[in-house]
Structure formats: C-alpha cells, structure tokens
Image (cartoon, rainbow, N blue to C red):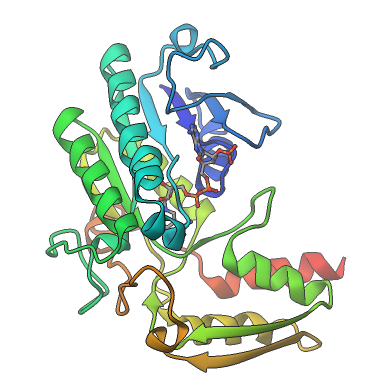
Length: 295
Ligand SMILES: NC(=O)c1ccc[n+]([C@@H]2O[C@H](COP(=O)([O-])OP(=O)(O)OC[C@H]3O[C@@H](n4cnc5c(N)ncnc54)[C@H](OP(=O)(O)O)[C@@H]3O)[C@@H](O)[C@H]2O)c1
C-alpha cells in the first residue's frame, strides 16, 4: 500500500508519516508547505499544478491522507475566504488527485462540526457547527465522503504529542514549565474535549486504511477535560513551574469564534471494531515528557 501524507510536516501528519513508514508492505511519501522536514517534499494543495510540487504521479498513491487546513479557529472566523480556500478548496483539489490516481482518501476532521450542547458525541450525532472553521471542516468531510467512495473521515480534537515545532497546547505548556519561563494564562473552564495523542491517531488511522474501512470514525482517548483541568494536570508534573492561570468562562474570554463547549468524541464504534486498541492518556504523555526533560 502506497500512502501519500499531505501535510506530513504537521502534528498529525508527521506522526502518521513516521508510523506508516514502519508498517510492513507500506510505502510512504510526505509533503510540507512552509516548513520543510527531513522526510517531506514541497506540495501546495491550493495549486496542484505548481511545477515545484512533489512528483505524485511517480509515486502513484493508493491512499491519500489530507492534513492541510487553516487550523487557527479564530482566524477562520475573520478571514472567511482564506478559511474556505485552505480547508474546502484544498480538499476539493485533493479529491481531484484521488480521482486521478484512483486512490482512497483519509480526511482529518474535528468535533467542531458539533454545537457542544451534549458532547461527547458519537459518529451519528447531529452536526451543527457554530464557527466558520467547523462549517468548513463539515463541508470538506461531506465532499470527501460523497466524491471519493471508500474514504475514511476521522474526527479528532485537542491533539497533542511529539512534533518538530512543539506548537500544540499540551506540549507548549509543558515546554514552558521545563524552561522555567513565566506565563500568565486565562483559561476557559467550560470548554470540554477529549484530548488525543497524535501517535495514537496515526496507529488508529493505519488500521482503518489497512483494513479498507470507510465512513466516519471518532478517534479519542478516555480523557475528558476542560482547559483548566488539562492545565492543572500538566502543571502537576512540573512542581517548580512559573505558570499562573485565571479560570474564566468562554463568554468572558471573548474569543472571536464560538466554541462547542461540551465537546469531545466517543469511540465506541472504533473500539467495537478494534477491541484490543489502547489509547494512551495525557498522563502517559506527560510522564514520558517530564522524564525526558530530566535526562
Ligand atoms: N490539532 C488539533 O487539535 C486538531 C483537532 C481537530 C482536527 N484537526 C485537523 O487535523 C488536521 C491536521 O492538523 P494539525 O494539528 O496536524 O495541523 P498542523 O500541524 O498545522 O499541520 C497542517 C499541515 O498542513 C500543511 N499545509 C498547510 N497549508 C497547506 C497547503 N496549502 N498545501 C499543502 N499543505 C499545507 C502544513 O504544512 P507546513 O506546516 O509545512 O506549512 C502542515 O503540514 C487539520 O485538518 C485539522 O483541521 C486538528
């Protein structure tokens, strides 16, 4: 199986690229857009005929994973056209690639397709995105399922884990603690989600691709935290930290994009099909992170 990972320089994509490459009988090719990494080549989903793009024809993928999107939720709310381009139009272009190479698609979506009134959600729950980001992700996932039969859409939220830029929330806060930096945070106490390690996302996605699964799958750990609980957990691993935080409501925080407050995802469907799969937890990740920091 040949898997092309578009967005292989990012958090989810880099974990997938590394994990897929270790699987027997799998060949991988990964791409970056603005941040070259050791195992990625340039590719722009908004200009698929750019002569500088990696040679996908030569690779001839069986499966194309698309990780590119405008992931800055508040920016999406104000830069609607840019959000549409980077999330919906880019997906339409990747759909075209799937048709050219007769490839299945793996698309990465979010719990922001829900309104957050009654999470955590299962795959059959009614969607009702509140934000531009959520609306565009929903439009993109629906296009994938309609246009590329046999494709998989996974929904994830609050992803953390190893990545070159350490830009995800959990790792960033942990790094600030390790570096002994001071930081004052305002944290929404009413935003709940199910954080997941990108390494587990990669393992789950590989199984879904290997087994020719299709449709929507939630991928999440059993962790279910609001932001205050999540940061308290991180800080508990670094007793000498210099971080202070104020616990406030989302309304007080005044973020431009509305958030699904009671978000998060249930994984009964995935666990029903893969009962031996073990999702790691934020605790597991922080244990390793704090141990490595001491070495
Ligand atoms: N992280 C989360 O908590 C989370 C939660 C729910 C859903 N998701 C979804 O998961 C996917 C991956 O998220 P992530 O956290 O891994 O994001 P990320 O680290 O920002 O990675 C995004 C990737 O897309 C690439 N990219 C951006 N614009 C591109 C373009 N025009 N052409 C080709 N590639 C482009 C980036 O390349 P460069 O970095 O090289 O520019 C990067 O490799 C996104 O679709 C996101 O909506 C993420």
